[in-house]
Length: 152
Image (cartoon, rainbow, N blue to C red):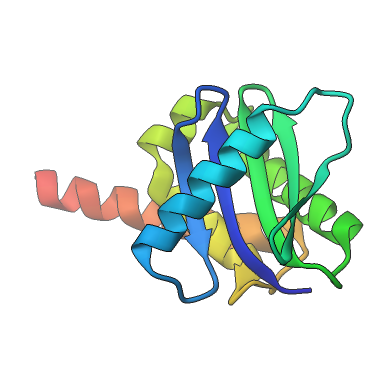
């Protein structure tokens, strides 16, 4: 299963996190984000979570005020991608303790770190929530410890 890109967008259309696993010009990335965001935000809650966009499939899921959006090739498994999105949200929930949009805004580096633990080059690297939390916890502790050392 290969994910081309993944991003989190608020109901207002603000991108909170984006990760690209394919090489693309910045202008093209901005156009894709704009188009896909408009496509996803226009859909009703009872509609299917899979949308065709050009030569990819957009898989999305809404949690509270955030949409988690991932793009896969048309032959990839949509349900596995939905499960991956859910796994990421579960890990974020455990790490932050009921994650909210502000957690991702102010601690975006931790959210990226956790995503990097789960996905490498668009492929699932680690499926164990405990393993991701163990490595994520150590990474967070290192950042906070280094902040403390610098402030002394």
